[in-house]
Length: 395
Image (cartoon, rainbow, N blue to C red; front, side, top):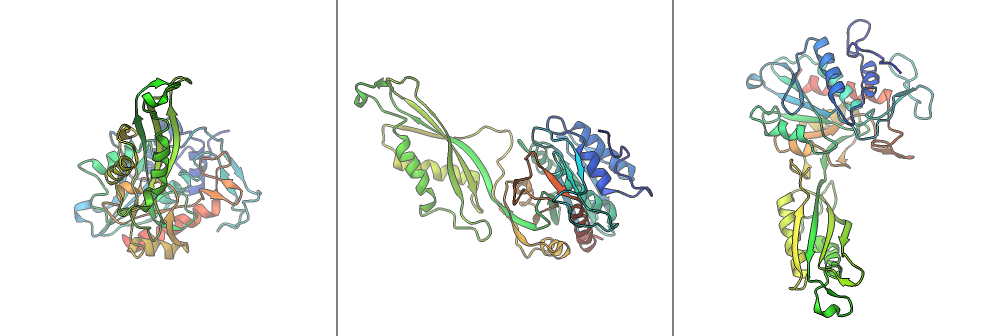
């Protein structure tokens, strides 16, 4: 299989052809190395007279309009170019069950299949199309494309923590993810950590002479079930509902005839605003300590990572960027159902998540699944909605 277009998604008249770009992008595997996809993205920008910059973290940055210090309005467009493993080869399907729409040219809309088609090269395509189409006057639009979103978000963290962060003076941030053209204004955070219990070894024939760390799991699991019922628990969020705490992995014991002195239980926390990682850590530790016998040692440690966890975030659904984009797309305003790097940006500016494609459909998972796809008409619709939104905000 060969690249559809090696000139950066150029149409016959030199304009940006979003579908040609997307077809080529899906053929650039980026589950292990984003280098080839990043080079293609930079070539695409350069071909249209926009000079990209790649920072030390591998982010691709480009802007149009007046300098940030002079801009009346500054909108940042963000998504990521890395994908999960394994790579799924590109296919174009113009007659499948998913292809029922007709695009502006009157041809079958069809679908594009392959890894990254909806997460998130389809959204990237729509963002690029709008970025090229808008002509900022007294304002500025910046496109900021990150690597490593699927693992540790090192690119996004560097983007927001640098001295020249483009989001720090932004008036709005639009993050590209598969939302089925809905505008998402909130998402739960995700924290992961391990509860370490310590006791004392003894012969299993005389268990009362030791302290059984595995047996201490019983009150710990009970405390996990009641964690959301404590007096200082975060309230149910109007968009996201209640936070959840789920035990996922347990390890303990060394010999079948020995009272175990150590046990570890990993938990998954899906938080809602305004809970932060530090607040969760403190509250869970106190709640568990109150449930455990004094002779059982307790330590709760977050999983080590070089970047902050993706925390819960929300934007006012009445924010101008949310209302403008929803009016342009015809989509609903709702929460996003997965953790997203939008959590890094929402502290700086009103932030929404938007794009073509779906996380799942009636048949099951789409994003991250072997059957990943995006509808061609949805990519066009997303591009038009984003272009109309940017024209309203910065044009």
